Length: 243
Ligand SMILES: Nc1ncnc2c1ncn2[C@@H]1O[C@H](COP(=O)(O)OP(=O)(O)OP(=O)(O)O)[C@@H](O)[C@H]1O
Ligand SMILES: [Mg+2]
Image 1 (tube, rainbow, N blue to C red):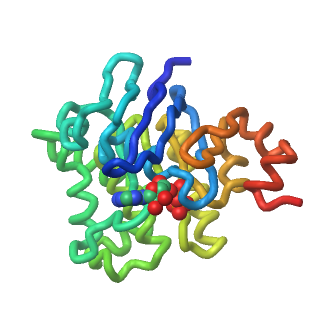
Image 2: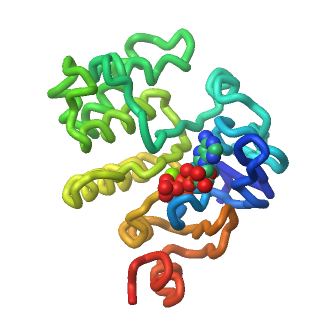
Image 3: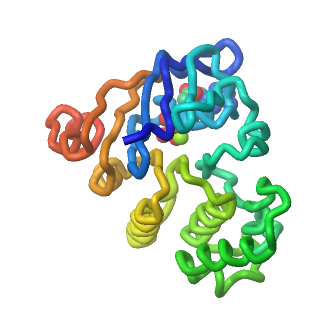
């Protein structure tokens, strides 16, 4: 299977503070891969480094086995039609804009897009998240936590990405809402989108994933098939809350 994202030996951090140490991870076409690890282990920083929001100090990020985006700024990634998009952990919608305005903004990087295609993509998002359709005129600030995460996902989908990086899409949600988001992520995978998923709900996320990585102190401590990680006693004790 082809690799849609290949991260090779990247180092990165903030100012002089190194957070990511020689990380290599990959995502194959159609895969759902979860990244877990303790708070502060560098999960968000890894995702931001892949997207160019945190500059790479060294190493490569290769998309579709040909485009090296390490060193590119996020706007360069977007304007070069590289089919990758990212849903941040926090501040992932524009609260003063309506649901529809947020969704349309998601399509902005697609230059000169035909209005009919835009409407088709809007339909696709509304089919996936009917609640966004019901609330299209509502300001995003007034959405519930779960609806807001759906809007953030929907906005990312409006860029029509093949690859999605999701940073804790179920954070701060009640279990029933988290389940709803997980089922939407399964639907996104069925649409053929390849997904890197960062999650605190580690076992739950691994259960729907093909593979997983465990990040500890900015390094990959474990990696493997999701079912092997769930079955690994030491990982269970340390990172999955099992005893
Ligand atoms: N903008 C920043 N400037 C300086 N240090 C930062 C910045 N953002 C994060 N850090 C630090 O980098 C380290 C890794 O943070 P990161 O947000 O990547 O962890 P995480 O694994 O996503 O944690 P969480 O599970 O809490 O979301 C932490 O020590 C954090 O304090
Ligand atoms: Mg984080």
